[in-house]
Image (cartoon, rainbow, N blue to C red; front, side, top):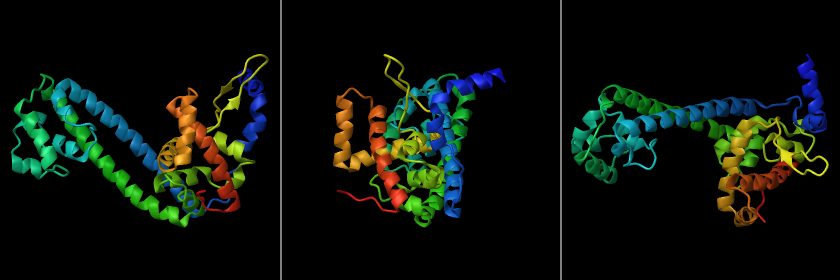
Length: 287
């Protein structure tokens, strides 16, 4: 009890801001509710895929680093098809041309890379027992990619039926997945007292933490981490498509900001646009 009271006392300066962020969710449309559920599921699968790929790469580095070296991305379809082609990973070194070209995603260019590796293939003594784990992980990643693609097929048409998602999609760089995720997590714009509270919720702003002669800021605990991740991806893509946004990003970088800090600074500007779009029911307009 005493700990809870101390925590409330420590956060007393943030309560006014928090009230603008943490409000009752109401008036959600069926499309927004479905988008929220589907995009959350998608993010879980994407995170799981990243974990499995990292584990698979670490095992490959120990068992057969030369095989890993032939690809820039271990979750490429052709590479995963190759890894999962045989139960014993050591047998991949003996696959013939017809078998390789029959694998999904393997064309002439990738076939040539595989053939170069096959001529000098080396496996550590761990291949006997670690190899099956690599094969299992490759097959799991393939399954996850199919599940994610199936969710994308469900999410995109829903963004057309959800007004907020459809409006967000008019912003250059905001694709159906990020727009659907943001629409589902934001819910209704009426939850927020102003664009500042929306910026906090989306992780594009920080709380003032200045005191006396000290000037600084800290991150808000009220951030929706899913919405923030979607914003970071969408803003980065937006920057690549809009020269004025790219110039703003470059200016922040020149000021000494890191990449993520510059993206958040640009995102903070975009939150003002998003607030106005959703509040006044307007599409994005390029000036």
